Image 1 (spheres, rainbow, N blue to C red):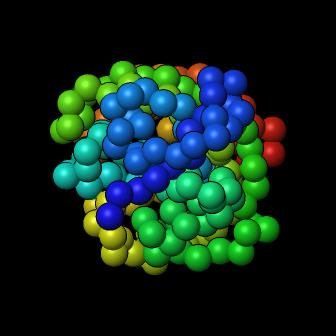
Image 2: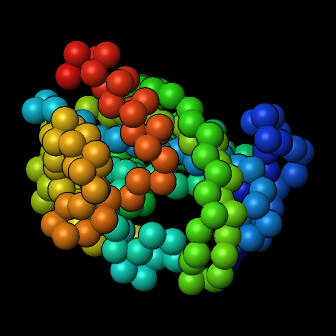
Amino acid sequence: MPEYIDILNEDGTPAGFSEEKTRAHLAGLWHKTAHVWILDRKGELLLQLRAADKNSHPDKWDISAAGHIVSGETALSGALREMKEELGVKVPAEQLQYLLTTKIQEERRTKRGLELNREFEDVFLVRLDLPESAYRFDDGEVQRVRYVPWRELKAMLAAGALLDGKEILCIDKEYYRRLFERIESLGV
């Protein structure tokens, strides 16, 4: 069943219609996603290894949980849904802390062809102290997870963005700069 997403104008305001996600990407329409970074008490961020059969960025390390906001959904409810779908984790909404919104535009080659991805990404942080073995990947989008100290991740990105020989998804270095700045401002 196709997934529909609400389309935005370039300034982030609602365009007043929704579109099937694949067609929105092929047409380069602006839309919203939610990103959730899981941070443990040791100052480690959880990374997920995307499934090898994902349409975009297969077999790469990525954000703890992330995904498109479906039509009519809020970024917060989408963030909670993605955590449950991708990692098998359910947390109360009040545990998610909004950090920032980024705007990205990237041209990418996928299994469907060339796509122009244009997103407003609402970024959240949640503090969880779960072992890697507590996460469940029932939907097949994630191969495994790994905690990495955020300062080590920052250094990895500066040095070429590899972890266990696999590329760390780094669409926009400005995104990570702002993320690390916000984490540091929290005293982590």
